[in-house]
Image 1 (cartoon, rainbow, N blue to C red):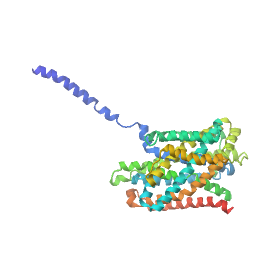
Image 2: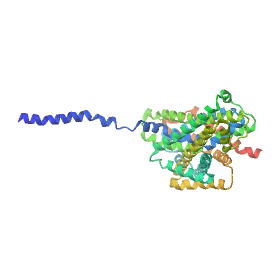
Image 3: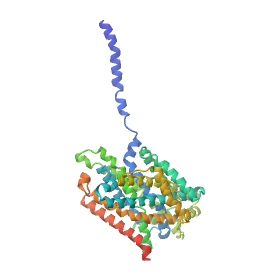
Image 4: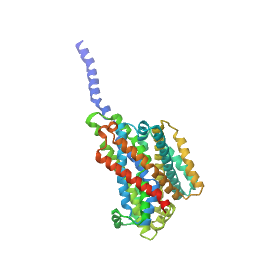
Length: 434
C-alpha cells in the first residue's frame, strides 16, 4: 500500500514541480508591448505636435524664408520654446486635476463666460480645420492633379478614418501621427540636403527685424505656432494620469514624463519648422526668388531649382501635415464641446460640418494660401482665451496640489500670454493701421 501511495504521489509531485517551474512565465509576459508603453507616455505630445507643423506653418515659414532669408529663424526657435512651456502647463493641468481645461472652465466660470469661451473655442476649432482641409487638398492637387474641391472631400474622409482610431485605439492613433511627423521632418531634411550647405543660417538666430512687414510676418509665425485648440486638447489627453496618481510626495511625479514627452515631440516639430524656413531662404531668397507667395509657387520653385524629388518631398510633407492636423483639429473640437457643454456629437457629423467653410471659400474663388493665412488670423483671436484660464487654473493650489505653479512659473506664463496676445493684436490691427 505504501508503495502504491508512493507511486501515486510521484505524478502529483511531478505536476507540482512542473506547475512551479512554469508559473512565473505568464507574469513575465503580462505587460503590454514596449512600443505601447512608450506611446502611453509620449503619445499625447506627438498628437499635439502635429498642430505645430500644419499647412499654416508651411505658408508662413516659406514666406519668411523666401522674403527675408534667415532673418526670422530666431522667431521660430523662440515660438517653439514658448509652445513647449504652454503645452507643459496644459499637460500638467490634466495630470493634476484629472479634467480638461474646458471641463474646468465649465466648473469654475460663470455660465455666461463659459458660453462665450465655448463659442470662441468652437470658432478656433473650425478655423483650424479649415486650414488643414485646404492644405491637404493643395497637396493632393500638387501630387496627383486632383481639383481642390474633391481634394477637400478626400482629405476629410481620410482624416475621419484616422479619427476612428481614437479614443478606443488611441495608442494606434498616436503612433500614426508620430509617423506622419517623421514623414514631414524627413521630407524637409531631404530638401535641405539637396539645397546644400547653409552655413549662414546661424545668423538667423540673432534677434532682429527688417521693418514693420517683417514684424507682421513674425506675428504670423507665432500665431501659427501657439495653437489654442491643442492647449485644450493636451489637458484632455493627459488627464488619465490622475487616475494612477499616488497621494503624498509622489504627486509631483507626472511633471517629469510630461516634460520629456513635450520637449521630444515639439523639438522635432520645431526642427521641421526651422528647416522649412532654412530651405526657403537657401533656395528662393539666395537666388533672388523672394516673391514666393503661394504653396503652388513654392512647389514649382523647388522643382525648378532642386529637382522633382525635392518638390515631391514638399508635397508629401504637406499632405501628411494636412491629414494629421485635420484629424487633430476635429478631435480637439470634440473635446471642446464635451468639456464646455457636456455634449457629444458623432465625429462624422462634426467632420461634415467643418467641410462647409472650406468648400465655401474655395467655391468663392479664394486663393488657397490666402485662405490659410486668414485662418491663422482667426486662430489668433482664440489664443488669449485659452492661455489666461490655463494660467489661472494652474496657479490654484486647491486644484493643482503639489503641481501648482511656482511664482516664477506664473510670472513667466503671464509674460508669455501677454506677449503672444500683444503680437496677435498687432497682427489684427495692422490692416487698419495701414
